[in-house]
Image (cartoon, rainbow, N blue to C red; front, side, top):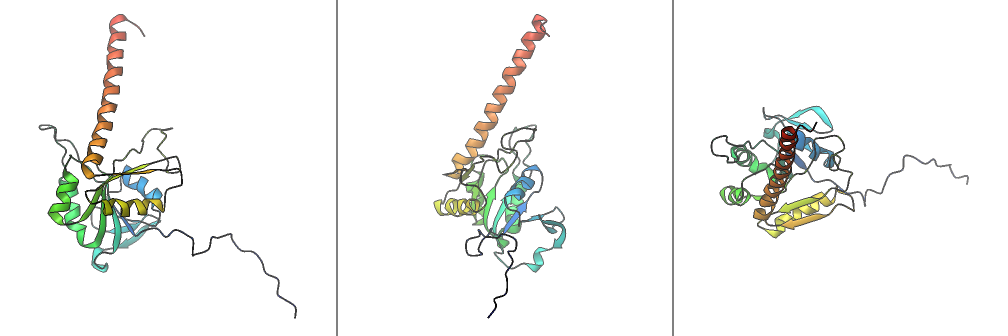
Length: 221
């Protein structure tokens, strides 16, 4: 019997060993949300009008009425939390609104927005949801070392329940490369870590503003 010659197709890994990405919803699709979409390329994102689109196909449209309860494994929240000009407090009202609105469709929430210390804990208790906080460090300038996910990025995941942190870390382990560490802590620690970063950047800006003022005073160009 003459065997038929076989031709090699496109090299592909066995389906048994390919990482299957979690079913992810991006709530807030600005700079940070789009960056998260580079990790979770099969994710959906939702616009302000409540329409769901796929990261891989922005022209696709769906609504929550078509989804079953607990449809998404993870929702990543990257909505604005502007500072109140009078009180200096962080306005987390949008974060609370989206958790309340989508909690029936999501198994785990991860906050990437900057929030006041205690926000994650309060959200978990108020809405009885599995939720964690992860400070975001993506850069916005050319050449920033964390501008692309393929760099040696890292994730800090803070949750009151260690099992929640472990599960969300598992989701990220499916899309991060081997050199990208994941640090686990509680939600209060994760929130203060973000503020520490912001304060350090502020100190650097203040320092160079002082240097500029000195140069101006001394007439140094």
